[in-house]
Amino acid sequence: MKTTLDELLAFVSVVDSGSISAAAEHLAQTASGVSRALSRLEDKLDVTLLRRTTRRLELTEEGQAFLAQARKILDAVEDAEEQMKVRRQKPAGRLRVNAAAPFMLHAVVPLIAGFRKQYPQIQLELHSSDQIIDLLEQRTDVAIRIGALRDSTLHARALGSNRLRILASPAYLEAHGTPQSVESLREHSLLGFTQPDSLNQWPLRHPLGDALAISPSLQASSGETLRQLALAGAGIVCLADFMTRADRARGELVQILTPHTVEVRQPIHAVYYRNTALTSRITCFLDYLNDRLGDQADQPV
Image (tube, rainbow, N blue to C red; front, side, top):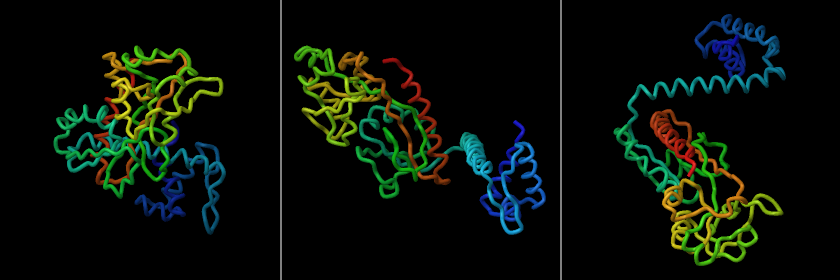
């Protein structure tokens, strides 16, 4: 790589500061040094990034395109340095974590003992909510969300994904028969969510598409309630792997309609506001979670 980080930093600082002299002051360098770094960068790229006039600096089209990439590179380096710093520290203090009750119960809680052993000075508060919460209003430091993200004001970190499957208990299938086609689901008891409607779109291939909008015979607001109903033989359900892995391993829930099932994976993200005072606690918690959730996602069951 010909370009140096100092040259990228000079370029971004000039753009953000509005002038070479302001950028030099921000970087604690001389104006001539910043100007030379900027010229070297343009020479290496063989493009003009900034048009210089006596009154102002203006980004060229090439400069605008390069700026976005330069920011990503500098952010990545900053994040890497921050993570190395965290590894040398012993994070301490309170960390409030929120997740939907099923994810908290099946994915987070089993990992807490190991996390506390590794980071004994972090005081965890675990809160469960099946609705999307306001982090500031609920005094939450990090929330784990499953599905597409909608709030662009939050800093997000991907933790992996979980596959959706159509499941039923052996007792239900023995009593009502195993559906062999998507159309035959009309003859069965379907367990679905009260809201949102998107959770009642099952990943099943049929003549009109790859998602089937079901009309539940029985509805619940929590995935854990639906899991318990399915285990009790109340009907057929569509749930994520993190919630049913142990049930499937024990044979208490079995996958049905496998040839008709489209592989859909729900993304899992941690979201939080960027807060320097909390960074070390959040980073070590999410690193710990990510390592272990990734191992689970690779399991074939």
